[in-house]
Length: 280
Image (tube, rainbow, N blue to C red; front, side, top):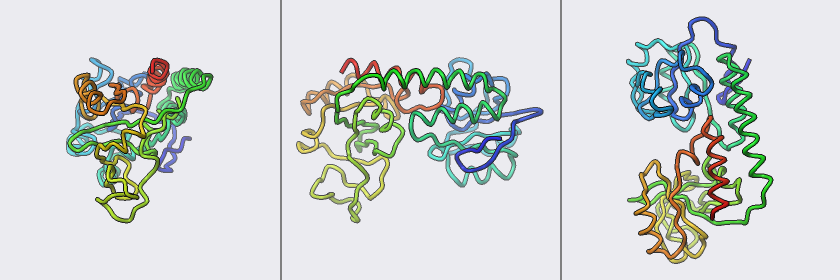
């Protein structure tokens, strides 16, 4: 038996297994585990692997699941994520789906348990162990090198500008190569939408995981580089070039899927990150 991130214990699936994935990176992982024939539903944001994923019915988005469509597809198992899906949606799904599997990888190494969880439940343990070996190899290759400390700001949106806190998968991914994301930690101010310790570049409430910020000379002086992610905002090389001219610091356009998607994408993501850091 296997215990998911919500503490629910699951037995090995049997009989007519029908899986719905409401998490884009998990959908890709299920394909890579060899479960395409059992996958009956996905969100519109589940776009990999292309074109095979097109054959799977869409049931809305990660935050606005079309429950009537999902019910009609009669899944026996639904895979959800603590960050991606709304709690009230998951609670409603539990009323008509026998098995709801909760996931919550918070760091790259958490993917090892994720592979084993889904591989175990769905009878794909050899495939899961193959992914475990591949990811361990990539993580070991990163750890075998000495990486100079860098201070980076990882931008995910503009208008308003938004970044990631240290309490995110992205930040922990970048930490593998000794890149520390700005800001240092969650805000400690009790006053939302105000300057924090005299720093008006981050007007956020305490505990904000994806804080907004304002560009300032003080902020730029703290940074070695800015990373503009290709998702969720579609930053381009033009954005990177313009911002680099504006702030006078290196600005790199980075593949957001490689640095933020967990699941099987983490294998290629770790390899991508190592290459990115080597070239910086």
